[in-house]
Each structure stands twice: as C-alpha cells, then as structure tokens.
Length: 336
Image (tube, rainbow, N blue to C red):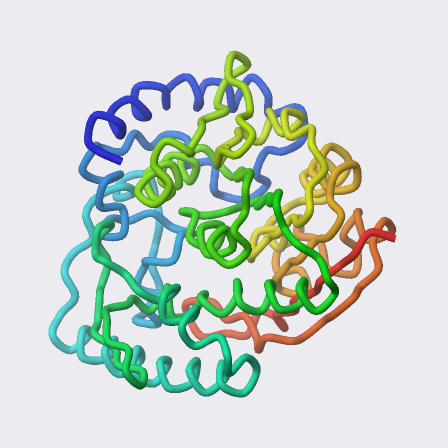
C-alpha cells in the first residue's frame, strides 16, 4: 500500500466518522471510553508507521510492552510516541527474550510440527514501525516484535482445533480485528479465499494500511452504502454494514473484543451476523466482566446456538498496574 492509497483512504475517513453517528442507534456503538477515537484525524505518516504512534488497543503501547501504563486521550492520540529510554529498552529486550523462550517452549509442547509456520508469523519487516528485536530459533533468524510474539500462536491454535474436526476455512470473519494482524495470520494458515474484518473506524483505517501491505488489491473497503463486498477479497466492513456479509461463514473469530462490549452490542453482532451466518466461532476473552457494561463469557447472547467443542485457559488478564482482571479463556464453538 503506497502513499497515494493511504491518502485515498484518509479522504474517505471523514465520511466514515460521520456515518458512525448516523448509525449508532443500531446498537454496535462502543459503550466505554473509546468514542474519543472518533475525533482523531491521523496524518499520512501516522497511518503509514502506526506502530510508532499512540493508537491504543492495537498492541504497541508501553503497557503492551509491559513497560508501564499509558494514559490515552485526544490530545496525544495519533501522535508519535517518545523514544524509549536506554533503561526501558533494555527491559524490553529482557521481556522479549524471556517471551521468546516461553512461547517457543509452549509451541514445541503443543504443536512441534508447526515451528516453520510460527517463525513466519512472528517475523516483522519493520514496515509499520514499532520496536523490532532480533530472534534466533534453531536455524531460523529474523526480527520480531513483542506484540507479534504474543499473538502468533493464536492462528496455529485455531487452525489445529479446526483441522482436528475436519473443518476447512474458506470464508473467515473477524469482529474487533485491531490493526489486522490476527486476521492476516489466519488467512495465511488456512489459505482463506474470502475474509471480512470489522472494528471501530480508526482501527479499520489502520487495518487497511496493514492488510493492504500484504494483500494489495485484494483489500476491499465496504465503508459506505455505495460499496459492495468482493468474493475472494479481504473486505473491511463498517460495523453498521455487516448485513453485507451475506454468505455462510466457515469461521468467525474474536480476540479480546467481546470482553469490552455491552449486551446491546453483543446482541447486535449475535443477531445480525454470528447466529445467522457462522458455522464455527473461536473467541479469546476475559471470562468475567471488568466494567459495569461488560458481559461475562457465560452470558454471551449467542451461546445457545453453539456447542463448545474445545475450551482452554490462557492465563490471566492484567491492567497497566499489574492487577488481575480475570481469567482469559479460549473457546471453539460449533453450531448445533
């Protein structure tokens, strides 16, 4: 995705933000404090190198690097992040090295034949910025980020769960996809033909940049009533346009997004997309609610349509002050 393509997406962005207000009564609207993101108009440079800028919720902030809490707000949002001090960078290197050992050990225990896939997923060419560090795994050498290291096993876990049940994935949906990395990983793992992504508008913009780098012209924007879904494309769909996803969905995924939604938002996605379309669903979320508007995993409004085929605990969720927020659970759910 070159600069002219980024500028073209940015030219469409004000209309996308305006439509947020027009369609928020449908029920998809965020219940927490994330609405301040709607006021942000990032620069071309901030979209191009988004991992060097302050964009919460996509994996590149100091608390994501376990380097301390980050205070978000309109004044600094989208601005370039200050460089880490030598002390913070050294600590980050230690965290990364320890994480590399732990993740590699976990992979060898669970999926020893997938090391080549995993190395491909953790690789990072630096095109989007961020803190890249060298890694060495057997004969493999490269550069990665702590964020890539933390999430790469997701795609391998999901692909093994689905394949163990004889299920292929040609059509994939992600709700709440951040900057698009998990979707990219799953497309690679399954060889997905048609994919759909939806999230808040700012994340849609960043995902357009990220996915456009890897999939080029396959990326298709469904941001307005005039846009249409493309079969064989990577369709980035506004939340209020998810009715455009009118095909059977082999797999729908959600990573750490349902846990922030209100019951109204969960019902919106359940009634319009999950229950009518999804043959299988995998989610990874905090089990118990944190805020008053959150919904606990056992109360998700689509559970009655699915049977849990596999479930596992993935540690605990912590905030920037290292306080435990709740267990993290992953479930593969198959339509009854």
